[in-house]
Image (cartoon, rainbow, N blue to C red; front, side):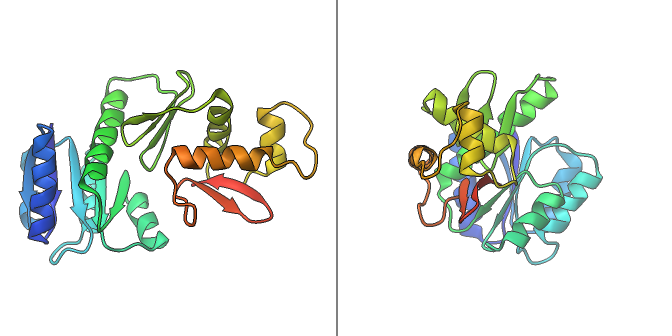
Length: 226
C-alpha cells in the first residue's frame, strides 16, 4: 500500500512516516506541496495524508486537485485548525477524514487502516451494509461496531440504539422516538432508560463526557450523530 504524507512540519511528517512504516506501508513523504503533486501525478497511491496549513499550495487545494483528477483513494486531512467550518470545507472538497493536531499516532494509524479497508471494499464491489462516521464503523448485517479498527462489544439493545442514530445521521432523535423504535413499546414520561443506555454506549466508545465526538446531546430535544 502506497501512502502520501505531506506536512511542512518535519517532526510530524517524520513521526507519521515512522508509524506507517512500522505497519509495512510504503510511504512517500514530502515537506512541500509541489513535490507532493509530482508524486500524485507519477505514483499509484492508496491514501493521502495532507496537512492543510502548508506554505505553498494548501491541503484544501491539493485535495481538490486529487478529486478533479478523478482519483478515488482516501484523503485524511491533518491540521491544527479545529473549527467545524474547516472540517466541513475539507469534507466537501472530497476528504474522507480529518485529524487535528496534536494527535495520537496510533489513532492516526487506525484511521488509515479503516479508510483503506473501506476503499478496498468499495473497489471490490463489496455489498456494504456499513455506516462510517469519523473512525466509527457500524455493520448492520453482522451487528458489529468497530472504532479505529477495534471491535466494540455492544449489547443487542445498545447496537440497535447506535444503528438507529447512525441511520438518522445529522438529525436529532428524541428519547421518545428512540425508545419506541428500539424497544417497540409506548414511551412513558420520566423514562430514563434511553439516557442510561446512551451513557453506557458513550463509555464503550470512550467518549469525552463533556464534549462527545459521536453521540451528542441536544438539550431538551434528544440525541444525534454527525
